[in-house]
Length: 416
Ligand SMILES: *Cc1c(COP(=O)(O)O)cnc(C)c1O
Image 1 (cartoon, protein in one colour):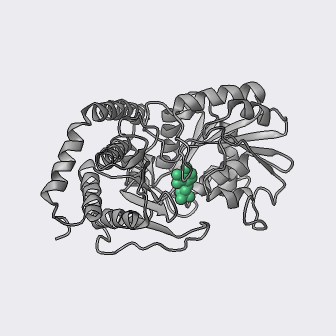
Image 2 (image 1 turned 90 degrees about the vertical axis):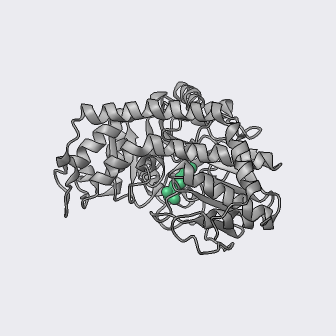
């Protein structure tokens, strides 16, 4: 019986949770505020059953799709938005944003070190010759971190060149070791960038950040936010897709890249999925709170066991990711195995490290999700190299996330 928890593990869980009342109250308050914003947007746009029916074929005049764009625009405080199932993942949506904003001779600057691994091929840092931005004549520059923090002076210098037409800011750390950025920090960066170059579009990779705070980067100066629907804003229900919200010209540029220049966002049927996008967005503030609670709980439990965590359990959160330094490979594998045993889907499989394309060492992944690869559902992954750090994220319900974490701990400690 894999779900059988030892008494000592149960006690550890209770002890951890008892020390988290303050954090949990803060997380609940944010979820309350964001739920009110979402509900207000639904009501102002008079959401009705007829929005859920959707289209086939070309997808012209899809009322539910077009209204959802408006609702996203309202939530992110922007002129326009594009929410589409046709984005195959977050990388695709971010790439469409970059291709829409840049043309030959322009320069793209990444403001906080290297972007997310999968963006390297799209930009042309690696894998040249497949139609990357670089192949199309867009130059790429990168502002390195200073003491693992954003370098505001370096940013001002790097963007001052008038050829710089877009600046990419990644809110979440991804697989980097820097801290994820708060919305206020992004606001400060936007001020510096706008002062040095008012014409550069500030594009924020918003993955894992949506609804973790009460504001979004577009409320503090970003021109565009982009993310994945199988992460936070899909609320665990969206079956696939991505979104952008921002300045109208940037949304149109991205839409022309997603489909065809001259057609843009007019086409793109929804195949009866509008309901899950609406319902997912409605649930998203709550679901994100469940994932953040799971992250904070995992941090606390592992701290009680003497492990180093980032962020610490008492830190204010800016995304749903929890890093735990497992220190040695066996401990890392056991932890991931336990997470897998706690999943509602594929709980019987044993994750093993494998050579994933694009990584320089084997990677181990634990996930048992209703939606393939959905990392708003509880999942853990780790490159097999020192300090054997596991990246834990998601949890559709705190109750199930909590169980997953405790099973991981039990696997780690061994049965009593
Ligand atoms: C998930 C993620 C992406 C996009 O990844 P996909 O797997 O393509 O959806 C980009 N940036 C960050 C920081 C992410 O967490």
